[in-house]
Length: 450
Image 1 (cartoon, one colour):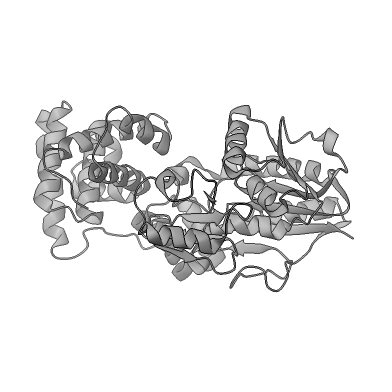
Image 2 (cartoon, rainbow, N blue to C red):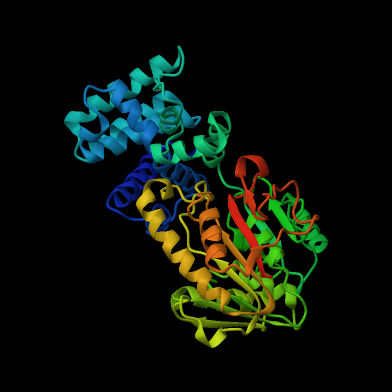
């Protein structure tokens, strides 16, 4: 990735400003958007800045380990701004095709421009030492313990890599760690009420935009190496498609709305699955989208308008109390708030925000939502529980506890033709492992009363 020499310090300074906001508690994507909106950058500089922000946030543990090994003071004892400048320089040397001279010199300049003149020599020394050692082999020294080595090498907290090693073994855990450090793909869901997959493919081909079909996802397409604004792609303003990962599309397909159904989505915002189900039903059914955040419900309303969906209604309120909907819905979806541990590639700072304690709190909320949602299902109806996490405390444990408390409910396996190369557990639920299926990590299960 290249950018003009004159603009590089400006782009890097903005990246440093973003990282300081993240260090103070801001979300990386919010801070980046806010900072880039202050003044325009060229497309190449914008892409460079975005890669630097997300990359350094994602790889901070590995970068800290390098500072620990190369410096005279450990990373957590470095002045905060100096530590971030070193992160930026080391990230460019280790992960980007930036010439060493450019990475080192611009990092030294950045240190000087931010009041670190006397410490600019530290920046120069550590970065040049890394470059010299990298010519002979990897400068990063990993610990002996497998889970800790994964955490240091791929930049994750130990509790998470220990969980994955327990679930998958060291080799597959390594593959999963690598997968989550990749740039995420962008999947689209074609709006069957407005167009066809073939028509979208023709329009994209005419615009020079490469896409490929998603196996097992009938109305899904994946953009191939796309850069640029999504809203400028053909058919966006016409409501031909929405952005939705393949795994998320599978959830709506598992719920399988039928003509005439009333569907309830109890945690609907930002609305990807609610609009998907409204598209499936067309004018032969209704979707109720519930969420406690009115601002997020506005996004659903806007998306429904763009997609031309008039069979979707919103209802603000706490979804742990859905009394007006008790026994009213044919199909109910609980797309539960979760830790997001299946989408770490999309949220650079998520791996640092979640803890075992926060997950325990989420599991309590998830159980409450599922218990209330079950009261909304008509006799003979269908209940689907889904999360975009891979943590068993938020998935299998929630379902097992629910079935123990409600013995008339049980998991119902999906049909044989559901998805493509998916792994159906003996208990009947689906767990999508990203490194196996090449899509976001998800858990989903269909429940019915016996």
